[in-house]
Length: 219
Ligand code: AMP
Image 1 (cartoon, rainbow, N blue to C red):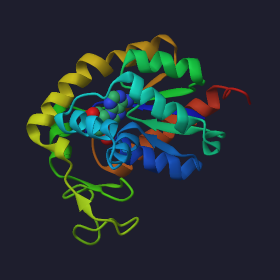
Image 2 (image 1 turned 60 degrees about the vertical axis):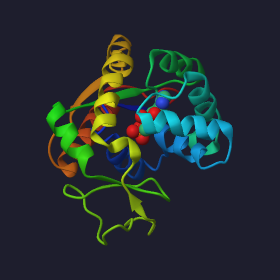
Image 3 (image 1 turned 120 degrees about the vertical axis):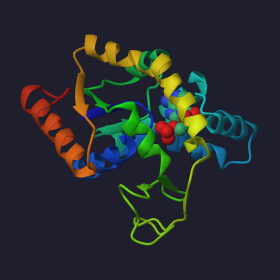
């Protein structure tokens, strides 16, 4: 199954993506994580990407596509993958379609108020990109990632002014993708309000229903 996770920043795509990936034994590929990895390299491109991310702006399609193209070629994607935060523009969606078949686009939805609350207390692991929340999903030890023991930090782009800008960019650039995948009959909306386990149960049901009803490509 080749799955895309759509939805505004802060909705919990990363968290749900990790759960689906573990359940199906497929990799979760996060556009944000891949780009943050690039920023750790001491290159001009890395610095340019960091500036975009810290300001809450999108990285250019050409750069994103090159990084994702290389990632999707890796052998672990052979049996499927889940994409989190990619594609984020129509251009990326069209380029992705030329590269690979997508089976399902899950669109996570929640009111704006809930998104702002979730983003406000979010913690990210420097090492593995794991996501926690001071209130909704606290780590067992303060400041330490449960998964890998890495240091947890608050991302620069999680500040309120940047968050609001990211939501605006989402509305303009990324939200049209829901129409795009709806027309292709690949879109399933999932209510992402409430506890992580409740959302993941809804996500799981949606995937199970889809698998029952539709032949997965190539199978
Ligand atoms: P995320 O971790 O998904 O919240 O993404 C963090 C930031 O990485 C975004 O605000 C963008 O600056 C950048 N980014 C992630 N994915 C993409 C993408 N597909 N296209 C452009 N920029 C992206």
